[in-house]
Length: 81
Image 1 (spheres, rainbow, N blue to C red):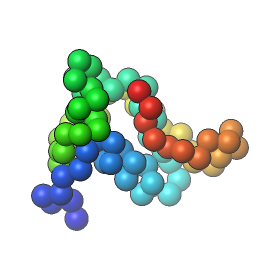
Image 2 (cartoon, rainbow, N blue to C red; image 1 turned 90 degrees about the vertical axis):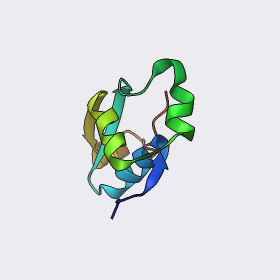
Image 3 (spheres, one colour; image 1 turned 120 degrees about the vertical axis):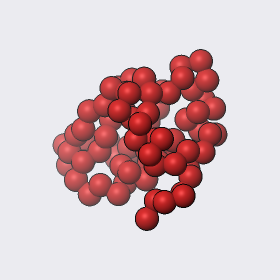
């Protein structure tokens, strides 16, 4: 399904969080992205799924149930650096 598809990291992150019915990934620290060029790499650079997964592995992430976040009033799952 993703072969050859390129999206920005922001688009990949939003797609994957919305595709998962029960859990959301929360990024604590985007260590897989260059901090000095983060805006470009996150919002503008188009990468494939393999590169996105590689960068996610270099980052600090946690997972929470969407039902728990909804109880807290959180329904927007975008990453805000």
